[in-house]
Image (tube, rainbow, N blue to C red; front, side, top):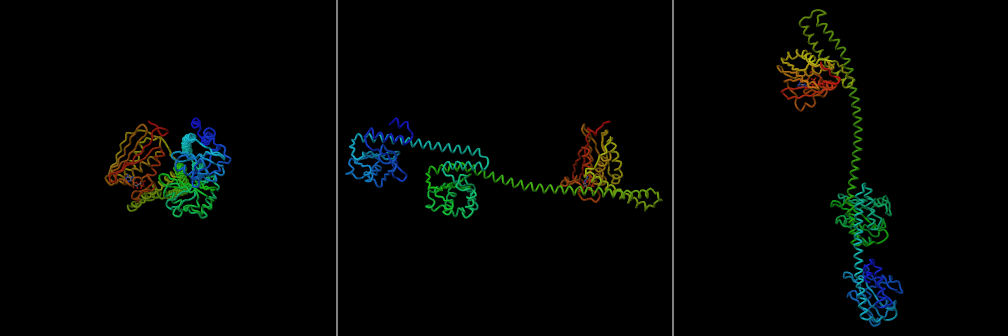
Length: 591
Ligand code: ADP
């Protein structure tokens, strides 16, 4: 017996050895049966040696069997040597098995009578000695130890299985990338832990206090559409109206209901619609907040969950909750990003159309300016020719008054021509139709020419003009255009510097470029306006004279020569405009 107890780890085997040994070796009794305790407190036949009836059909109810009750209460064996005199045992059983004398023994595990062993003969008394009874008792006690071991072993095994399941679940979740992966992993393990295939996840909206059906396992009796449809038709899961959901959401604890219609908490209408008999509802908690609940109903039977099982299902849900909430968050984020991207694309398209239109309008404008200034130039040139003829006295000498008038007209026409030319340049540059006419030029010659042209204007305002140049270099460039840039800067210096001010030109070079600086001691440019200075048509004070195009054109011309232009200015003190022209490459030849 000891050997068997130590080598077998399953109940039926050990109990069979127990009953056979008692029957054959110890008391030579006809009938030995073992009865196992049931959750309702009765004892049901489990195994016997050779009973004439199916032992599993036999149930001993201590409420009706005084003999069994006595053994259970005293946790001790008892012997009735003559059942006709001691009538505590259930008469129906005595009659059925022709019992004349009977030995009853408790099987005690952890102070609980988990089973009963009955020993008797069929139709005749046994006449057991005290020694036989004691040995039988010792034998049953030995079996109790074995059963206890088995139970512990089974519990450990169970615990291990559950831990393994949780470990597998964590593993599977870590590999689940999409929301669908996470969901099917959840459903798979919830089914494995409950044995039920109908698993529905509801999401909880804290503000509105309602739950909405989210996803249903594919192993369900219903399709997800049917499930959602039935909910839509009239099942409102408002937690202030549904006691069961209210309890689960507020206590954050799972609730199992073995018979839904015998319990006031579940929504009976909903249970009827789905044919639910029993169910377990588990909260989904992530970061301490309930974001949903898992409903696992049983359609076929009134399923009873032990506390242990409920705890385990809750652990499964706890592990999945975090993964699920992350996946839902990511899904929502994904959705939001997709929506924003679509909106942006839409906006981009509109912007592109707008840019196209603006470009078209800009081209139209430049074309218009180009043709207009072209058209204007011819008559203006003709007027200027006529004025020249008058000025030179070809048509007869003019008197002083006439000469003054002609002189004023001449200045006005020259300015008009300059401005029209500026407009024409600008339009050409805008349209990309501008071409440089490069030639080899001594840079100092351009500077001298510019100074010569400017001198009458500086003299008029009693301004000094100084040139400091170390450069004696020839460069390949468009002489007229660079002269135009220099004159632009010098005209501005003259225009925005009060009488008696100073203008200076300084030219330096290094091995890569020459650099030209035009300084003045004029009114300067306010800091907040400086960023607009190179924009076309911009003027700080909307001066009447000038087009606001000079600097914009100069910048383009310098950049066409692959140089750069910039300035610094202090309001009230003066400005320095600088530009560079690269030496080297095609543009360069030194003499
Ligand atoms: P315009 O001189 O025809 O108005 P520009 O493009 O040459 O156009 O110059 C733009 C504006 O920059 C001028 O109207 C003026 O307000 C400012 N500006 C340019 N050069 C100077 C300078 N040397 N000193 C002060 N302000 C200047």
